[in-house]
Length: 220
Image (cartoon, rainbow, N blue to C red; front, side, top):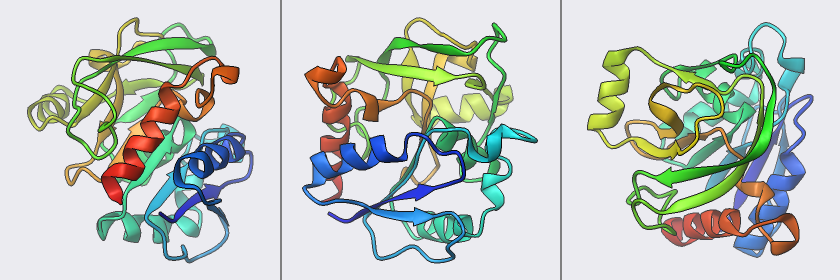
């Protein structure tokens, strides 16, 4: 399986994502700089966490205008799986690939801790490693992780089974405890917590390793 990680100015989880992908796929991902205009042949695109462009304007807003995002949008519309983690989730909403927006945390504080998530949809290509209702533990580290969408959009996400993860103890005020959602086609995932940070017992957990391995198996 071929994978790639897009690197923006001030991405800080790109190497973590690369390590997780290499562990899961057996091959190092291609690191693609945001100023590039093409993505090489790949089976999976990851937009990593961080603070692209220093979170100026709005988190992810400037990164969504980077040259590489045109290629990401094209890949997503062609069916290539795309994952946006934390800042990557923010970029996906700003680029119009996912509905809703990520606002300032309800507490107005930066939140950095482990959280428990419930697997709402175990049938997506991103959650095949887990049973519906399973509880997984990923860390969060964000200031703007409060997911918002209007009631009509939230009802549609519920009705179409596009909410894949929910917080058990909501750390940021997200509507309906949403931690991760997919697009209508099911090949784009936005996820606020960081599975790439729990891929080994040495890092405090292995739920992230199962997450990435499940994606490899679902897309191979």
